[in-house]
Length: 110
Image (cartoon, rainbow, N blue to C red; front, top):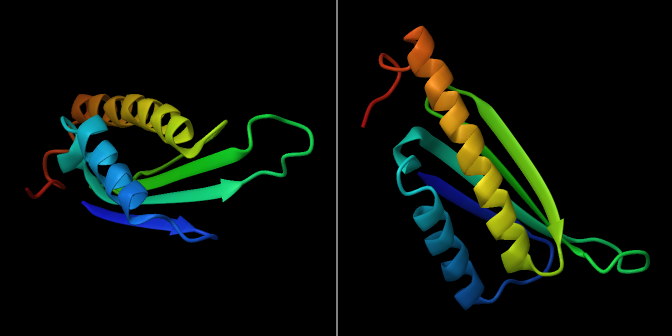
């Protein structure tokens, strides 16, 4: 799994390690299915809402499916948690769909 972290402002090293560990832990059963994952943090203008941190997760599975999930929350950690929860459900759905049609077994190399 190739993890890419993108932000406009500088990220603390502890938060970068936290993000990597959290992604590996959250996707622990299906991490073998993910080829590349990109996490992008950004700040939303704080004028109108109390939720001002945005997290966008885009990933590519081994059967070349693109999955993108975006969430906005009060802080980065909460946004990441919500995104990972939704991403896990979408990866599970892609796995079941691929197994159902028998397309997945010839494309996966562990």
